[in-house]
Length: 120
Image (cartoon, rainbow, N blue to C red; front, side):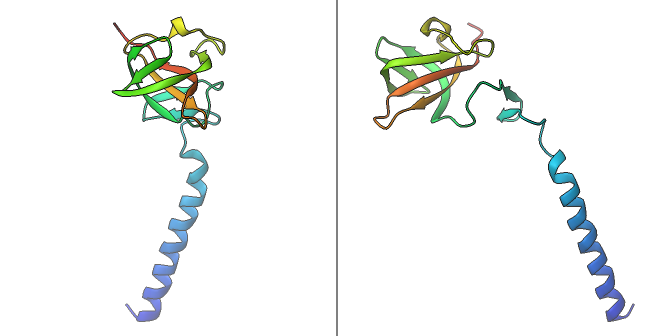
């Protein structure tokens, strides 16, 4: 094989790979509008795209919560949500639940979303 034929062959392969990637890129996600967390968790559409923190609830107090061994202060007004309700309550969060949370500039948690309920 001559050098010119090798170059044409490699150009063709490179072009084919590039076109394949461009065509497949839109289909690489799980579904349109779905937010994935990890490999198997699909978040409801009313959940935020990003959380300041994620983890399992170890302890819940009146003004604080421990998530994955880290103590966090709760803001004076915290909103709660579950997979089935945008307007939950503090009673929806239990020990062992896997949650995502958003915090303010003072690093106080202002919103908690229950991602997976514990099996306790």
